[in-house]
Image (tube, rainbow, N blue to C red; front, side, top):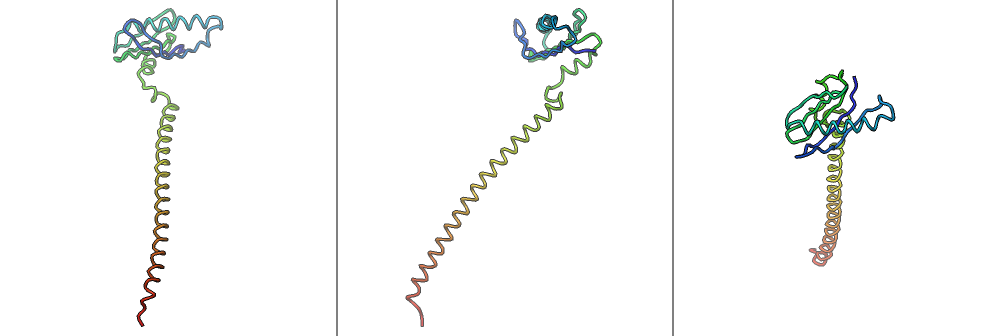
Length: 163
């Protein structure tokens, strides 16, 4: 049971465009790898072009089984595996949301979201701190003014003492 290729393509009006692909060609000899990868890339593009929107199919090509899924928005995914690889597993892989498929990606997304929330919280705390510093400065200034007013009022009232 071996998975050789996983490709994401966009199906255009006349031809498909490869967006991203991953290959595991370790089971082939070093000198065969480039031609096998080229064969897989060509086969992937050809299968996507011949598959209608909103459908999935499995195509046998030599000793490989190619599973394709073309969504209604023309985003396509192709898995190339050996004939022993279960078809159900391939289509489950193609149907999954990439953010939910990998636990590490999901955790990373949650961490990124938490980091953004924490950053926003820190910014609001700093803004509140600045506002508190302004309030403290204003209250100190008001306290100094009230002391000056008290001293001035005492001086003014000292001339008019009642005996």
